[in-house]
Amino acid sequence: MSSSLKIAISNAVKEAMRAKQTARLGTLRFLQAAIKQKEIDDRVELNDDQVLAIVEKQVKQRKESITAFENAGRTETAEAEKAELAVLKEFLPEQASEQEVDEAVDAALTQVTSDGVTGPAVMGKAMAILKEKLGGRTDMGELSKRLKDRLKS
Image (cartoon, rainbow, N blue to C red; front, side, top):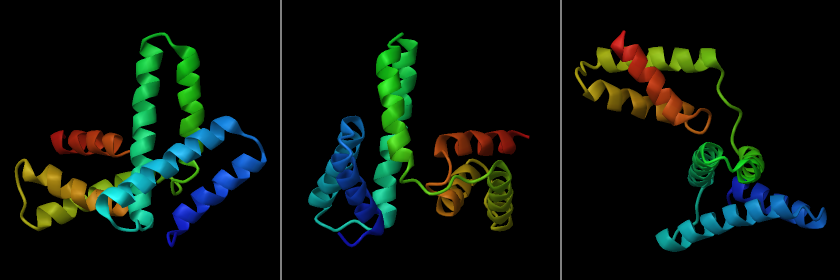
């Protein structure tokens, strides 16, 4: 366990066990299992960026589940998913501000156009730059929508 994020998750599991927080403990164990499965599948020890990617994936899954449960009228299940989402968000870095996101989008578009990229490739190149700058600090789906809107105008 060399990754500081993995250590933080492990410590959170221990704290949840001591405090007898069963719902929190279940979410954290599920996260640990996903990390361990990835390590076994790839036969590597994950670093913080790779662990963060797993946390982001789990967050995205919870958000999609919440939407699906709310649309189906299953508010109790949606609330459980929201509780899990709150636990997972503890391990994400501080979210980027609206202004920071706008500035990053402008900078990425400026860089891509100055590199001479045109047409549909602009979107892909700009998203690659934005993912590097803002990865883990903002919702990539929302960022993609924002970039598309900016490209249309």
